[in-house]
Length: 122
Image 1 (cartoon, one colour):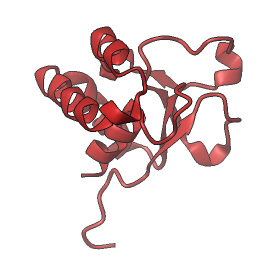
Image 2 (image 1 turned 180 degrees about the horizontal axis):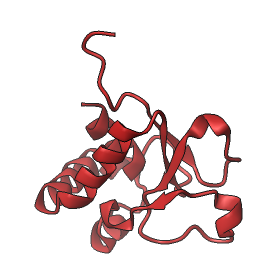
Image 3 (image 1 turned 180 degrees about the vertical axis):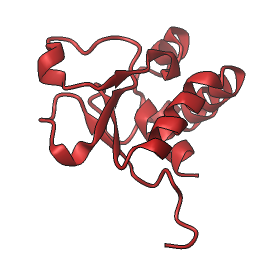
């Protein structure tokens, strides 16, 4: 398909949802391991914790939707200052048929995976 991004195959999913073959390569993008979940049950293929927001930014955001616009901006700025983890993630997305960014946050609309997916799909 002309013009289709080579990283359009990027999906996002909560780590607590059951894994499916359609997930493809499952990449955990959180800095901390999800609470109460075994490695076997999480079915993670890669863990790129360095791509997660800094602890300071994560705590400031606190998953407050009112802070979402500013969180996105600050998070993208962090990724620009430390581009290697995003480059690694982008390379995996280009190499694999399907990639799922896996995260633990409860809010499915306001989390770092949403920001990363939009960056990877550009």
